Image 1: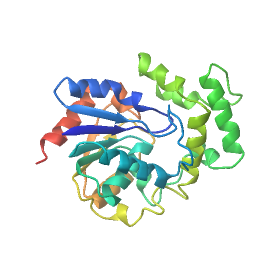
Image 2 (image 1 turned 90 degrees about the horizontal axis):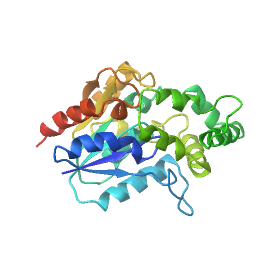
Image 3 (image 1 turned 90 degrees about the vertical axis):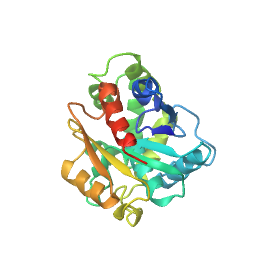
Image 4 (image 1 turned 180 degrees about the vertical axis):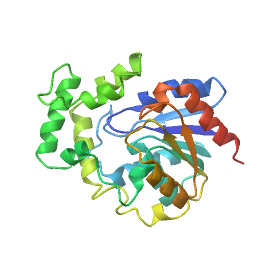
Length: 256
């Protein structure tokens, strides 16, 4: 079996490095996929919409030797849920965090509302990219990422920030603007019934971006289990990779 990891926004596969090291030390094979345009070139003609990324992910998974244990974080969680429910990909299992974002009543957070607004989003993102290069945004645009990474020591956090560029910024804007009014819209039918493969919803207890009640609703609809990862927040896989690995291994060991 191969564990395949999908990152979120504004990230790269580096976010999984510590967790992958924990898992590989116990003999689990791992792969971290990088979304097009995130620390890499944006393919010619690639629209960077939620459907474009979901189709890309399904294609990338078909190129791997399965069955696959698929894990997604942040926007990667939404893409994993889409592939697990709407694509014919050989998954043994899937696991996601931030499941409440997939709820039909989810409203984008204030920053995402700015990103989704033409003009304002471009202005914000230009300042964000400049800050990542050592500049400073007039409104402190990058502060949210820096604050989220405050408890994550080591080079991985710095490497995440260093990979933010104009290409990533443009992909982020296109991705968020494709999810109107939210991720659930357009994917409602598939997100409202059990997924074919066993699923796990991870709930980092300190993640303020995730709503526990809505996360539980989404898990129930998809026929997924829920597991708590205590004492960590949005970057749970970097904050406590040992606990994250233990949670995932427990889920995987329970599967046929």
